[in-house]
Amino acid sequence: MDAKLIDPDIQVLLVAEAQELSETALYAIDQFVMRGGRLMAMVDPYSETAATMVNTMGQPPATPQSDLKKLFDAWGIKFDVDQPVGDMSGAWRVRASADDRVQAVSYVAWFSIRDGINQSDPATANLKSVNVATPGFLSKADGANIEFTPLLTTSPRSGLLQKDQLKIPEPAKILATFKPDGQQRVVAARIRGALKSAFAAPPELAKEDKWPDNMPAHKAATDGPANMVVVADSDILGDRYWVRVSDFFGQSTATPIADNGPFVANTI
Image (tube, rainbow, N blue to C red; front, side, top):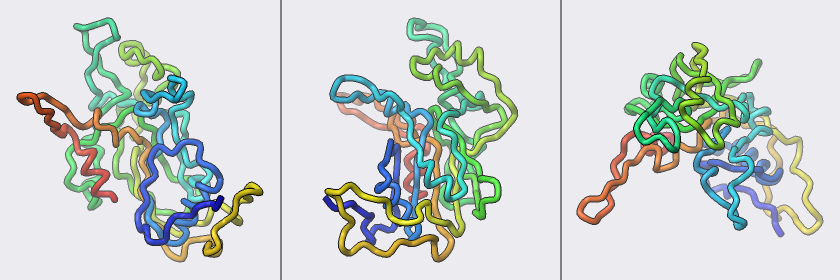
C-alpha cells in the first residue's frame, strides 16, 4: 500500500480532532506546511463531541482528546492536552445536576468568548461571540522564532479544570472547586514564521508499504514564513454549541446563537 502525502493542489488544510495519528500522517501534514501549505489545526484536551460517540462495541472513546505534539514541539507551539480551561465570564447556565430541574448554575467548562475576540485580525474583526466547550490553551514556546497572534482569549476570570471531573460532570461541584487565577489564556492563535520540520527524514514504513513514486524531496524547513491558525478546541465545530434548532409548524429551523461558523469560515 502506498503511504499518502497531501495533494499538492490543496492550498488550505483543516485538521480537526485528529486522534492518534500515525507517523506517516504527521509527516504528511508537516511536509504540507514545509511546502508552503496553509494549515488550520483544531486540537482539544477534552472533546465533548468525541465523548458522545461510541465505537462498534458501544463504548465511548477512552481518551476523547487530540493533539499534534510532535509538530507543535518542532514549530514552537505549546499546548498541554491535560489542561482544560474554564471561565467564569460567559459561563453557560445549566442544571446544577442531572436530577435537579429547578436550580441552575454557571458551568464554567462551557463559555462564550466576547471581549477576548481579536478585533484587528481580518478573520475575527466582525465577530461578536464564539462559544467553546472544555477548551485548552496555547502559548509560544520559549525561544521560538514565530509571530504568535491571539485570536480568541479567555477573560482574567479563567482557571484550570480537573480532567477527571469532566467525564460525568456535576456543574455545581465543578463550580465549587473552580479557582480563577487572573490569567488570560489564548484559545486560538495565528502563527507566522519560518518553521523547521519535525522530521529529519521520511519515517520508515512497514515492509508492505511504500512511498509514492512521485514523492517530492524531503523539506527540512519552510522557504518563507508559514501561515497557520491553531485552535485549542474542536467543539467549536459542534452545532449544539452555536446553533439553536426549533420546530416551526413541523419544520426544523436552525438559528445561530454565536459566530462559531463564521469564525471557521473566515479563518479558512
